[in-house]
Structure formats: structure tokens, C-alpha cells
Image 1: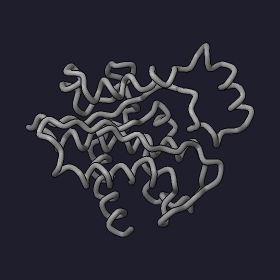
Image 2: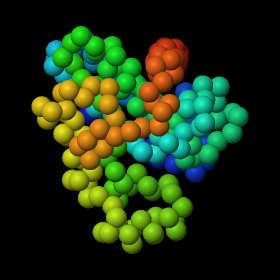
Image 3: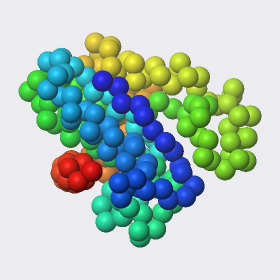
Image 4: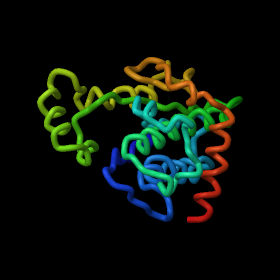
Length: 196
């Protein structure tokens, strides 16, 4: 299962079901899908969460549970970073739950790719991306490579719980390895989803 739905850096706070839209779409939506299908997953199944190096832009506390509706302030990039950190924490917690089985859960950073994901960015930043794209950005195929590798390559089966980039293990923000934060995120997300 490759979870790749996402929205990025919304310039204004948008709410749906009482939650900031990036957190709802990028994390809670994947949580609903994955947990809803776990009992149908193969004994050797893999779950790959598309995270991002932008998880480093999350608020200092990582997941600011008291501000998931943006009532205490909103900024597009930190909100996006929070949702991508949530992807990492979810994959790591899922990997812990898979321990003792042949199931695998991992999170990947695909790289920076010129897609419509950046449509909400400042027009000048969008123009800079378009100009620099051939020199610095990955093609769509290059960006998809790590996610596909994590989903099917035999070597990736030994990397459950890891953050991957360029088909290798990457070093995430230290908060991404916080087990207590990952457990709390799981519990809080279950409660949020139950209330939807």
C-alpha cells in the first residue's frame, strides 16, 4: 500500500471536520485508509508513507496537538511539516506494531519534483521552481523511484520503520524517532477519526 495523497503549504487556514486541512488530508486520511485495510493486508504486505524532508519544518514540539485546528495560529509550511512528520511517526509506529511479522512499514522522501503539489506557493517561488527544474529537481520517475523501491524491492523488506530517500536509509529529524510522540499521535488520531 503506497500512501501518496497530499496537499502542501496552503496559504490560508482551511478546516474540514474541525481539523487543519493538511493534517487531515496528509495524515488522518492515510491513517483511516491503512488501519481500515490492515486485516486485508498480506502477511508480507508493505505500507509506504510518502513523507518529506519538509517534516523538519514542523513546529518545535513536532505535533502541536493543541493546535490541530489552527486556533493558536497558522502558517502553511509548519502545518505541512507537521503533517509530514505525522507520516513518519505513523510509519514508525506501524512498524513497531508489525514487529514479529513479515509486514513492513516505512516512510519515504521522494525529493523535490515539479508537480502541481506546489500550486499554492507564492507565484515567484513557483517561477523559480519552473526555471531551476531541469537543473535541480527530480523528474516524476526519479521522484517515484524510492517509493516504488520501498514497496517492492527485496532489500527494502529489511528496512521496516526507516525513513528512506534516494533508495537508501535517511536521517530524519530526531523527533521522528520519539516513540512516546508516535504512540500519542496514534491514540489522538484514533480519537479524531472516531469523532468524524
